[in-house]
Length: 416
Ligand code: NAD
Picture 1 (tube, protein in one colour):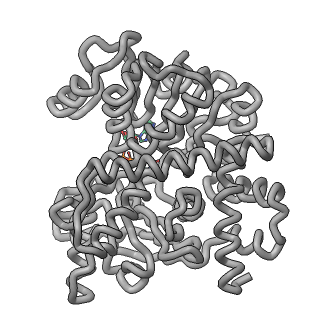
Picture 2: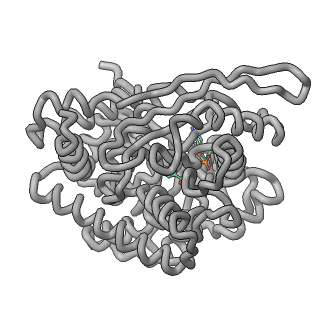
């Protein structure tokens, strides 16, 4: 049977499995399988050549029973409403597993930012915010960056929102530049949180981190920070990294500063000194201790899961592993740190950013990292313990922790 790679079908199947273990009330289960509300819209953008191009945009507010919904905005040529729904569902479970007083949302625009000029990108970002401004805000729904969006885009969106509402409201968006109220430590937060989770997983499986080998797929915000932090903090030896065009490999380890300089000069990983090339498929099957997918969905499937050799699979990307691959990995004893636990560092520091904005106060990076460590370590052990107690894999365990909390909030509100 062909594997269903629709991310929302996967998110629903994951929920179904957890609902069965939790013996969730059927009405609650039905309610939690679908987004609370979603917005689809057109964004007309005046292009540099004077023509108007129309882009399709989405915002899905999956569940806000535990607090204002929270989730990034992705600009991607292959964006679909089902990807946004899945990511919004995972945000709901992520904020619950990290115990943040927030719900889950996600946004997206079908576009290729690489083909847009800076001015076109600004007009698109402002257009997106105009389309959603009535439905977002500090107490409703708080956007943030995701794939192919960044702090500059958040700054344009914040400005557009504040022009529309006529007052400052920096906490309505996170991942913005620090000068406009962004948090210290936010840029590296997703990777940093993942590194804390890897440290705990390594303790559990008895893997010494010093000189342990690691491969990272994806070299954007998350992957590049993970590379730097893995080496700097724990002395991990990162032997391979990749981006959408392919990867590079050096069995003695790849220095993150050398790569950053190379990317700065050439714009790509290709031709990096002292490295061989390898494909993304080869990277995922390398004989390493730790594998970090940090790119996009559906990278580890029933086709290649049996060939994954890493002892720890740390999912910094959202949805990199399919349900069938999960079963294969569990049976062969791979220690999985599931996505909405492993990458919860980003939304955790986004939440810290909202708190700082509310108090008009700044924390330094050390304080942010310490608080993040506490949150990640607590969340990690809650999931690990749940897995042990119920003899389920860590993804199901993360769902058990998260779904129980969201269901209780829904119930307390009297919705179901
Ligand atoms: P990014 O846009 O900064 O980087 C994405 C990277 O993935 C790029 O290096 C790109 O070349 C690579 N890539 C794209 N398609 C690929 C493919 N088919 N094969 C291999 N590499 C590919 O995005 P990001 O913010 O680093 O996000 C990466 C992942 O982490 C996504 O799944 C995102 O949802 C997740 N995530 C991000 C954050 C955050 O704070 N940015 C938080 C939580 C989760």
